[in-house]
Image (cartoon, rainbow, N blue to C red):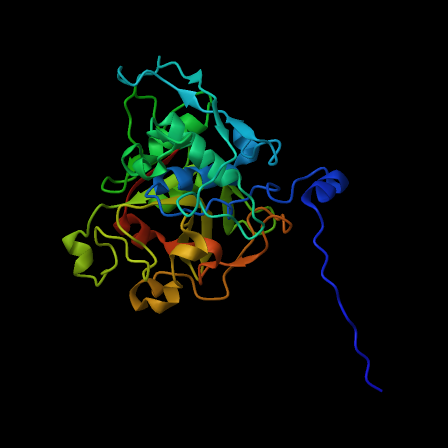
Length: 340
């Protein structure tokens, strides 16, 4: 006897789902995978935005708008007088930006698989904050490519005690760590051999597996603008000034730093490309970068919250997350930093 079942697909109204759960399925819950860079060269903003979502417990900033169905959203930013040099006395003041819910595609940040829009709303509000031209009520976000840097983005997103990249007691202006310099040791009371050890001082170890840990402050890193000769000689042919989507790492690009990982006695720094799965192919396709990635399986579970962050094999770069050996990180990243 043959049995056949007819299944009718019913679309449940979003308002009904929201009434049942108290959550809008397009906005809940923000996680590191949500900010996916679109067709705008604003990795310097999208990577810090992802890092803030990754560290929302520490920052306390309301990453997602409270009501995704609203006609407009007010996003909190922090401003300072850019006509004056930064100093320890620099005052940051609230600079909330209100924008409509209109999101012309395909320029804005890509929607997540759940159609969440909070990252695109933040991007739109930041474009207004950064002074992009307003046309038909919307900012021309293509102008964002020349409107900021990772340190600027973290500063305006996060209002914390020091409100700056802060690594020493020296007065501002400070830059973040430059990998051209020898890492300071001791740092934060710990002896540091390399920049993996520096990053580890700003991480919380996994309680059950201290070989991995999660950053406890929003942290980003950026690659060189072009290829240093010494790395060309090593065969690192993927860091030219233009972005090559067939390669894992690209020049003049900002990445979220998520934590650390050790495997086989090797030190790895865990990163996320804000381009996510739309912007890069698997690093396994690149024989050079493959040698600097952990051997699979390299399961990474730094937060032990599988609802938001399933255990990941960080070697094949799922959703833009991957682990990179510290020597490659030092060679291809110009610098990195965080706000505390």
